[in-house]
Amino acid sequence: MMRLSRDVAGPCLAPAGSVIAIGAFDGLHRGHQALLTQVCDHAHVLGCSPAVVSFEPLPRAYFSAEPLPRLSSVREKLGGFAAAGMANTLLLRFNATLTAMSAEDFVQRVLVQRLAAREVWVGGDFRFGHRRTGDLALLQQMGEQHGFAACAMPAVHVDGARVSASRARALLAAGEFAGVEPLLGRPFVIDGKVEYGMQLGRTLGYPTANIHLLQRVSPVHGIFAVRVGLGEGECSWPGVASLGVRPTVNQVSQPLLEVHLFDFDGDLYGQRMAVQFVAKLRDEQKFDGLEQLKAQIALDARRARELLGMNPRLVDA
Image (cartoon, rainbow, N blue to C red; front, side, top):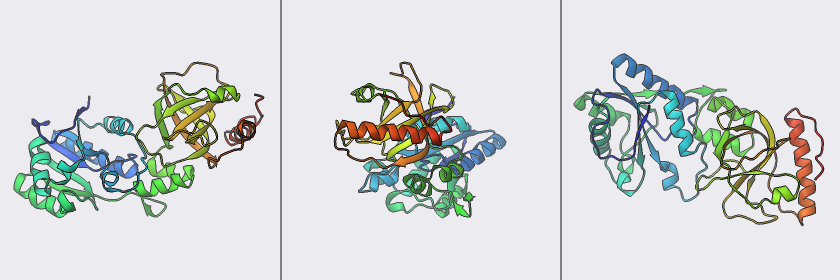
């Protein structure tokens, strides 16, 4: 079972030593997966613990003037670490205190004292510490002093270009779900708990399961054909979804994911649901009243059924 810690200070988490991966790990794409696999393999050979150091909020989000779209929630990221075999995750609070820490202090306090580093693995462009003064060369220099090796993981390429979170975000923003799947090594999914809503969809003939994204900024917005997984099940149930602020009626301040499952009859409130985005149908738009909105929803449902290989019939409200 993976152990999760949040603080720089504290007892050593791995007295027998650690092989450590460091990074933001948003989306846990194929480059991240290769890095975590390398860490697990080397930890097994050395007879010590595989560990990961990551940060929340993401460093790019902390320093950005604009909200940074996320490929994965914190819950999804931690689940990915556990599935990859990490024994320890040090999910550091990225705040003013951490940003003021020198690169040398980070190595001493986090890698040496907290995790007893024997190997440290990073991406080739990794930077850390106050004013980003730390890099692979510094890790290697301090590793000689403290008895650990520092290595850069080679980049993973798909279609001749480096796999990166930025590349995946750009593809998702363009609705290129088929293009992003080889980068992530899986379809793009948003997972969450179904909560009560205004039940407007029910009055329009299209009841929806609602997922509040809270502080997460989604890289996708609009109307989509989707496949849904309930509980721990596969994403196989077809549906149509809206992710946005509902500009026609009851506009909300934070984007809401609303999913209508085709031919489904049941109570989903309180259940966890995973929504796999298959194709973008259109952007969100404001309509001149409920009748116009209802007519467009029927067209969206028909188009989603076609894209999902179902009978493209209109459902009478």
